[in-house]
Length: 341
Image 1: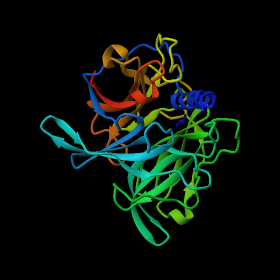
Image 2: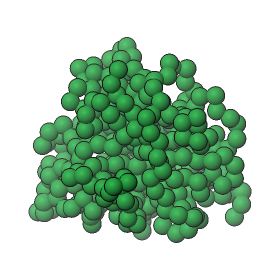
Image 3: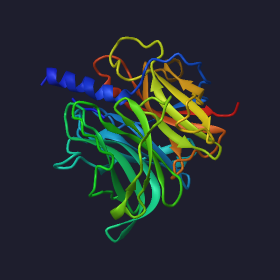
C-alpha cells in the first residue's frame, strides 16, 4: 500500500513503495520465461493500479486491485474490473469502486491489497457468498497495517465491512505491520490465510462460516517465502509468485523489484518444513516485459484460490518505469507460464 507539499510527498512516496515490495536480492537458479506477456488495463492518466486478485468464473474474469479514486491523489481504494471473453482476448469494462477507507478507525487512511473468495457465511442474520480480506492502515507513514474482512452477496458487491475488524491485529506502530493477504478455501468451514507480518510470511486458518463467532487460528511463520508473496493451490501442488531484484539498477523506484518469480512445491510438503522444498519454475523480467520494474504479482485462480490446472498459470502484475513518474506508470500486465517440465 502507498501514498504522496514537496518533501513530505517524497518521504511518503518512498515509504509507500517500500512496503509494496517485500522483495530481497536473490541468487536462485532461474525458471522458464513466460510464453506471453500482455497489457491488461489501466485506470488512465493520474491513476495507479497494483496488487491484483484475479478470479475466473464461468469464463468471466474479475480483478480486484488497489487504485486511487481521484487523479494524482494518492489514497488507496479497492476497485473491481470485469473482463468479458472476446475473439481477441478479454474486454475490460471501467473500474468500479468496491471498498473505501473508513471515516474513522483502523482503516481510515488506505484500504488495499484485496483478496476475494467464494465462501458461504452468515453474519447478523444474513447470508453472504463472498469474502474479501484486505489491508487497512490508520497512519500516513505506512506503518501499523492490519488485516480486515468484508462480505458480499454477489461478487460485484456491495461489500460491507466486518464489525470486528481488524481480524489480524498488529500493536507496534513503529513497524510495517500485517497485510498483503492471499487465501485458499480449504473446505466449507475453513480458509487458509497467507499474509506478510513486517518481514516474514505467515499463515493461519480462519473459520468464518459463522462470522458473528468467527474462529481465528494460530499464526505460523512460512519459511523460505518472502513477504508480499501470493500463494495459490492446484490439485497437486502449492504455487507462490513474488517479486525480487536481479541485477537491478539504482534508479527509483528501487523499493519494488524488477523480476517476477514463480515457485512450486508438492501439496504434501509441510508449510513449516525445515528444508526449502520450493522450486523456481518461472520468471519474468525487463527482457520479457519491456519494463525496468515488474512487481506485485498475483495468480489468476478460480473462486476458491486454485489454479485451473498444473499445466499453465496466468500471473497478473504491475509494471513501472524508472524516474520521477514511476507511480503514474503502474499499469496491469499479465504473463502466461507453462508449468509442464
